[in-house]
Image (cartoon, rainbow, N blue to C red; front, side, top):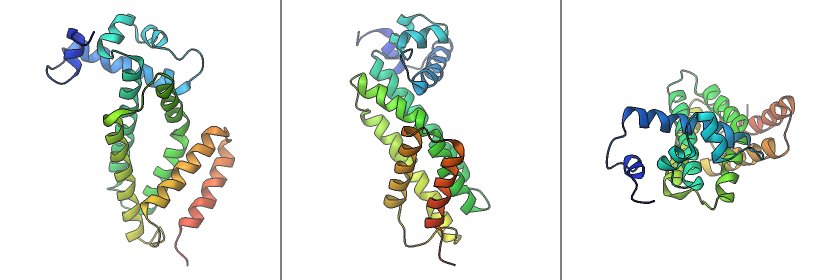
Length: 198
């Protein structure tokens, strides 16, 4: 299977045809939705059905379920990084940082479900997913630095502990299925702790 034309099309040595590129993008979009919801219906067969393609088309682009899930995870990290980078130009860096923190926590359940599906499929994320994750972390760091320079975040915290708070609140929100009001109050407490002393 490693020498199939479908794989050559997706590994960067040859550009994808327009129809193949459209299929690939649709598969990724549907897969993110299917695996992000989790549950028993989360399968490559369900992805193929909802994307309107045959299962063979899915496997031409993504030779294994793990490869599909890694591509979905990369796409998700890249999109979040782009959103963070767009906020880096906001005129008010404080709200830009806190709003994006809030957005990441709200987005966490789907990302966790995809990550767990990847582990179940025998994948470990791979180098590309690790690079995409690092890109998101750097973008969050840039938002944090701007917010600190603007005096919206205390200057004695650094990215490792802030990111640990982000991961912890994301896990708590997703695992405990927190209601929106509870999550909002939790984040208010966290944000109060990150605010500079007045």
